[in-house]
Length: 475
Ligand code: SAH
Ligand code: SF4
Ligand code: F3S
Image (cartoon, rainbow, N blue to C red; front, top):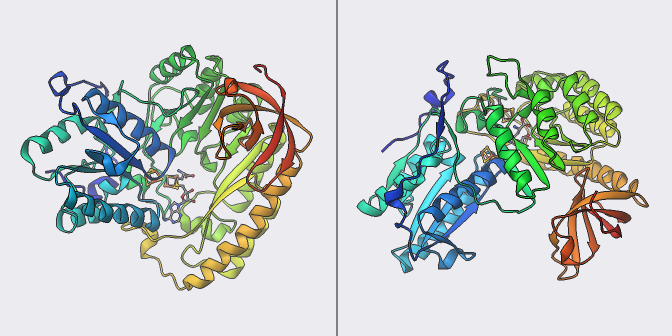
C-alpha cells in the first residue's frame, strides 16, 4: 500500500525526468471480459483527458463502456481537489455507490485523480469509505491495469498513490470523446505554488513533454481528420522552461500551427510567462484561434501579492492591452477568486475596476476555498461568508453584462464555426464554437457535424449566440 505524503509532494527534486513508453500487460487482457465500466469525471480538461486514457486502458482489458452508472460492474471516480465543493460532490457520490454496493456486492469501485493525492482523503477512504476497492493517483495512471488486477485477485482494498512524479509516460492508449476535437497534453504539473492552490501538490513538478512526441501526436490527429487540438497544461506558457534547449511555448505553437491542423487552442496561460513572441506567433498564424484564457484572480495588487501570482494589476493590464492590440478580434476570458483571506471592500473594488477595463468575453468566478496544506489556508480570514457571497453576486452582475455586450457586437457578422453536434433542443438544431470560442446554435443537417462552416450571427444572449448558416463549405 502506497499512501500520499504532502511533504514529499511539495519537494521539487532535481532528478531528470525520463521518458518511458507505456507497456501493455498482455496477460491482463481478459480480466474485464463480459464486464462493463463507467467513469465519472470531475474537474478540469486535464482530468477529462486522463479519463480518455483510463477508458482506453479498461477497454484493452476487455471492459465495455456503459452509459449507466447503476448498471456497471466497475465504477471509477476521477476526482478534483480544486475547491471544497468538488470534494463534496465526490464524497456524495461515494455515499450513493455505497448503497449500490450493498445491493450488488460484486460492484468494483475505484477512485483516482487529484483527491487521491491528498493525505486527508486517502485517510478517510481507509477508515470511512471502505466501499472503495482501489485508489490510484495522478502520477501512476498507467498502473491502473496492474492495480485493478491486484484488487480483483485479493479482494482487498488496494491503494497505490505516489507522492512524487515518476517518469513521463508516452504512448498510453486513448479513447477520445470527440472525432473532431482533441486534447493534447504538452506539460504536466505546476511549480507556481499560488498560495491558494492545491494543484502543485496533486500534480507534481512541472514536466514538459518532448516536442517530437507532441508533434507526432498532432500529426496523427491531422491524418485522422481532426479539426481542432487544445494544448493542455496548468501553465502552458511555461512550456519548455524545464528543458536545457531553448524551445519554448512560442516555438511549439508555431510548429503545431505548421502541422496544418485547422484549429489550435491552448490553456491555461499564466500571465507571468506570456511573452511578446507568443503574442506575435498567435497573431501570425490564422489557425491559432484568437481566444485566450488569461486568469487574473484579483484586480488588487495587494491581494495578488498575497496570492503569490507574481504580477501587479498594472502589469496584467499592460499585457492585456498588448494582446488586444496585436491580435485582431481576440476574445479574452479569465478566472477570478473573491474573498481571498484579507480581501477588503477596497481590494474588491479594484477587481471590479479591472473587469470594467477588460470587459471579458467569459469569466469563471469563485469564492476562495481553503485547501488543506496550502500557504493561504494559514492566513487569517475574517470576512463573513455572506459578504463573500455578495461580492461574488456583484462581480457576476458586471461580468455577465460584458458577456452580453461582446456577443451583441457580433450580431450581423459571419463567423467560422466548428460544428460539434445536435444541441439539447432536439434533432434539428446544431451547435458549435466560433473561432473566438463562443457557443452558437443554428439549424442545419447532421452532415455538417465535424466541419468548419460560416454562420451569420442573428441573436446574442449572455452565454450563447444564435445564427444561420451562410454557406456549408469548409474554411
Ligand atoms: N492553472 C490555472 C488554474 C487552474 S485551477 C491557472 O493558473 O490559471 C482553475 C481556477 O480555479 C483558478 O484559476 C482559480 O481561479 C480557481 N481556484 C484555484 N484554487 C482555488 C481555491 N482554493 N479557491 C477558489 N478558487 C480556486
Ligand atoms: Fe494553481 Fe497557480 Fe499553478 Fe495555476 S499556476 S495551477 S493557480 S499554482
Ligand atoms: Fe481539479 Fe486536479 Fe484539474 S484539482 S482542476 S482536476 S488539476
